[in-house]
Image 1 (cartoon, rainbow, N blue to C red):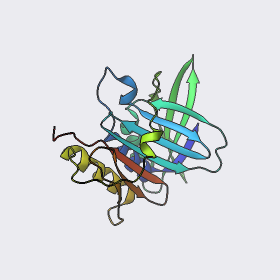
Image 2: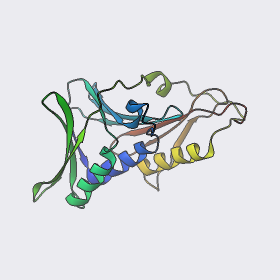
Image 3: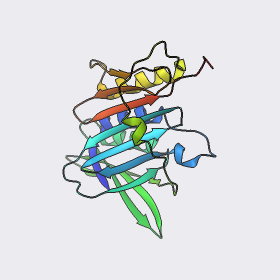
Image 4: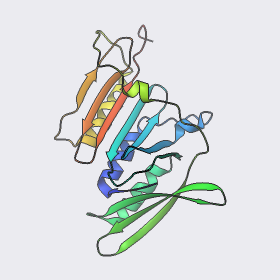
Length: 202
């Protein structure tokens, strides 16, 4: 598995994903970032079971299918590499394996200097929950709908981060009993955020 993307975009993508990443050590899979490639599209997903963020990035050259869960260290590693690469640099994520252990090599590249910095993040040996049915849910509206203010604010922040501050985000679904959904797009791909409503104000 391999993807190359602008350093600034990579930083924004993982920041947006990190907002919904789980922190419960007892649910290890949810503390990582799920990376899946299928149908020429890279899909990165995080969830803490209350909210879910995903970013899809097209890659017509990727004709294979695979998936891994990157540890949460990926967020900081991408920032370090992007800073080293500087303005105009790219970030490459590439999966490797040594002694049966999968890892992700993250390195910055620049037109002049080639590979200029590299970080290693290990993959989690867990199974990520199936989230496709939630992501692809119907666009329903039912008001009033109650949401955790911090989670809803984080969702809008993540969508704005991906879209860019001067581009709009789209609220596709707000529902009292079903997941709400917000999307945002830029020149690289699409962000989708899903948030579960609160029941009875609790």
